[in-house]
Image (tube, rainbow, N blue to C red; front, side):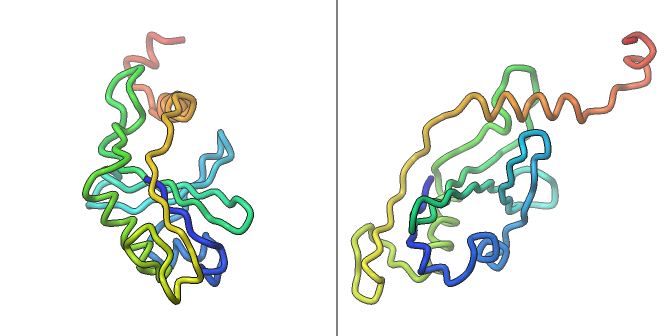
Length: 149
């Protein structure tokens, strides 16, 4: 899901806003891309995953839910869910921190901001790069190291 807000409503950088909202910064060194995550349990997954873009005076937050790590070659990175109750609830939390009303119409005292929620387009390139990174990071077992030379 996407949430679009006016930059002036944040009163700080998007990075600081997200950190204050409980999100942690992660950086993919291979692709040189930063994003934010919020864990939903004790483990690494499930987690909420968020990217943001700045377009003029607007900041566009793009969020999805990563259920789990890829379990076999050629699968999607995390079995991401782009809509659903968990994602919608977190979008509402961000919206309330910004001070926007829940409707998509501008309201009084809201600086005329229009909130739009959209489902992002699917990109295979991101998932393929993430899968390659996971494969490179996984250590080989002792018997694989013995026979794979």
